[in-house]
Length: 313
Length: 277
Image (cartoon, rainbow over all chains, first blue to last red; front, side, top):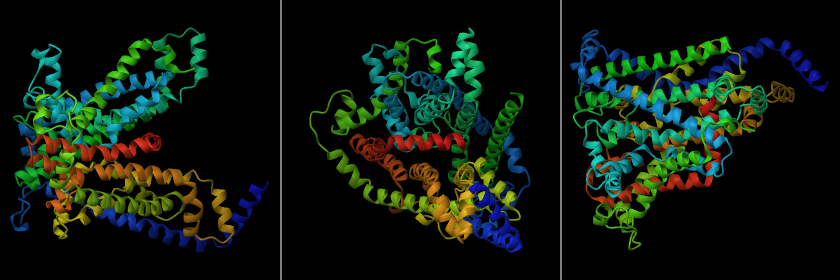
């Protein structure tokens, strides 16, 4: 009753001064978003537009006089650039490893912890810890683990009598990229586990019980009851995983600088070497624009998949 | 009753997996902490032996050589200024998007939202040219300006939490004659305290640990942040194992200790942010 009375008076007041109120709200609205907008437009929106424009120029980045408009020349070159496509392939491999190891692995571990296992809190605490540590420090620590002669991994393998498996991990064109990706996965694993645990916490115990009484199989329960509930969480975990695979940079820069023989180059390390070591600003921005388009497609597909799912349900 | 009662794995198997991953996280840190007390030679020749002495020499040397006092001062200053700035800027903007009706609101909101899909790696190069053109190359101010522009997540998250505040409370305050700003600071802000804490926690970690922008914007060591200083240190002392271990130790433990003290708050904030983002 009282709530009704209050909204009633507020409505009445609003009608009396409504034009003035609307004008004030309009001014206040722009006044409130302006400070944030200045920074956002200046250092996010403007650079993106800048990147698009520059991607049509050949420029060394030093003096504006040397900039030359070449139309889609950079994109044509990029299309035939083997080094670029090799980097893209490395990112795709990273995405696959992240999806399998991080996304699926974290779901299994989250399910185990969710079962109410003893020490679950402790495991959550440990798994999440790398998340707060800088990627550079983790990368440097990983160098000690993977280093060929004195590295921890090889020493351990030799001590276990598995010396034949020892590798010059970061110095090997086959193993450098997986080693870097594993390091990156370890950094983010805990967040995926935590998100799945929070998702699994929303599965209704009553429905599980009912399904069990009805004699549903474990696979049916997982697919029909658990999956629909954790679907939003799962889609975020998978999206974050895919995006982090395409953005891979810090660990590569610290651990291998893209080597040996470019075997661990990613799109962003390639962009970095083109723009800063090669002084080719226009070409570097064209790479950036292509990465932007790739991630846009990923985001749109993910949005479509989750939206589509909801209407079907 | 929980879902995993139906899980096809046994209890022993579960523990094996959990422990395996826990070891993967703990072992490198344990090795680091053990090695920091050894001399350069012992670190690589007998990597699994316990230290014979308890000498902090590696940490002291790395601290001095790597100028970690400067690095920490820079990192903390940049992080604190940027995070406070973000909370104020995006808090105001989020309120406008959540509660005020102004022409063009939806278009502006979409513009702010679109930034969610633009990764920092693409901004880095063009914004570097821009920073140089502004004469801000190699300054900490350049980093702060960049971080203050990281609006999308904060705006989205704060707006969602402000929209959850019942309108009746606001209307009651309005009848009492409170203006918009007073309502924001005295009614909305206290009710959305946990959302602000979430944004503050997540942005603190993002900014403190950011490597890309310091790498691209900053040249001189006296303007470097901890991650950048650490990577430059690595380039200079490739085979000085004692120095390297000391430097990693210095960079790794302070955030881990803070996390140990506040782990419950930090991880729950990340869940809140991750699921709603």
